[in-house]
Image (cartoon, rainbow, N blue to C red; front, top):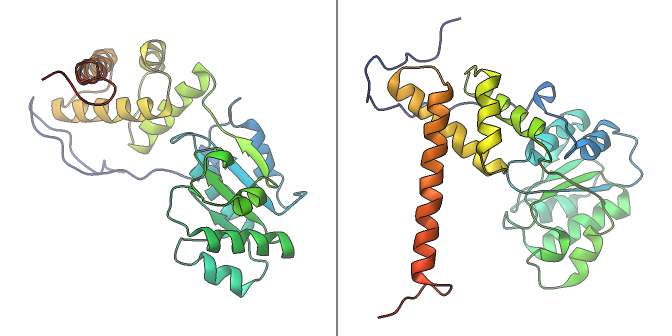
Length: 249
């Protein structure tokens, strides 16, 4: 099968905004120490002790990927901010996914009613959130008290192996093959966070496209240097402005 695009044939040519499809297939989910319990719980469906499950973790650790896996297993729909109230009133037992509980703009009353209906009728509900329940921006504790009854699982990138596997998947999503030694070089020198891995993969992909070369150690080193320079610049700006964003006149 031919490649979806042609690599640039001269140095300095701008990379095109072609985008890439992120795979949410179960075969592409990377199981490691930071997500093993959450994955085991999803894999145990439909043998769940209770109707509510909450998966917590920072951006980029695979919460949406795991939610998609469960949605396919359970033939679940997705509750959106504008449909949560209607879904709770309609009732039923159809499983639902509620993503980004604390960030997606759900009205507190609608979410409260949906959780109540789930608990009352034992309707399976899988929720995802970046923040622990205590930090959710809701004004009363009624919703939080229901959420605390969920089976809760944290997700995190816990070791170099899992971070390396994340790089493999990021490059696979871009239809790019990268030497494991290059990935090892990155992991040994980068800030350990999912967001940093995503940023580095994006920079390397763009650099390789612009120059018409494969992603190797040289491209990796330049991407690391660019991220380091950006972080240093941000820190210098923060030091100059001070903690309140002001400086001496």
